[in-house]
Length: 219
Image 1 (cartoon, rainbow, N blue to C red):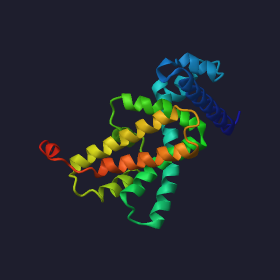
Image 2: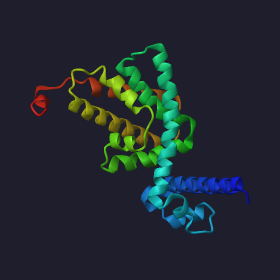
Image 3: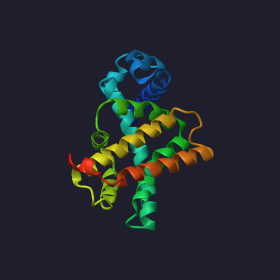
Image 4: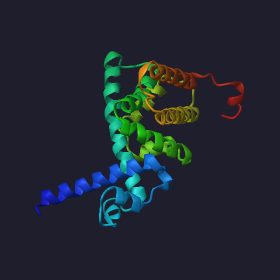
């Protein structure tokens, strides 16, 4: 077999394993799926196939997260570019719309992404890991740009409080979107548009909320 043929076969095997794992995670729950079950679902005879391609189960999960993050990055960059063409310094609501519209559109267009978000969003929320750190590890392409656009409108917050608000915003968006993703047909129709706009409202309000005297005592 030629080198190109070997590479093609390798890529197919990786794709089969990824699709099998995602399917099982959605059906049985992330923590209930074994390596053997993934191998069997992928139609692989060699039980070491997963270890060969991804080292271990966590390596496979990380590869899934990287690929899905790439989907998000592509759509988010497109939405951000469109927003910046209208206004080079978009207001907070416009930036929030970009952040939230990205997974919203993907869930509407791609049911496999919706299923992914329903499973992995919950895992992220219960992992105890800050979302900002998780995104930094995945090397997302436009998070820094969005972060800086928001920071430019919130001079009344010092860096520490802004970082806390930004983490709270990210957590709220992930929690809301992943919960929504577990409902069938939840990104279609007027109810979905209401969900989207209300989530933008709440996110904007969270960032702009005045700092109370009580909070200032602990800053």
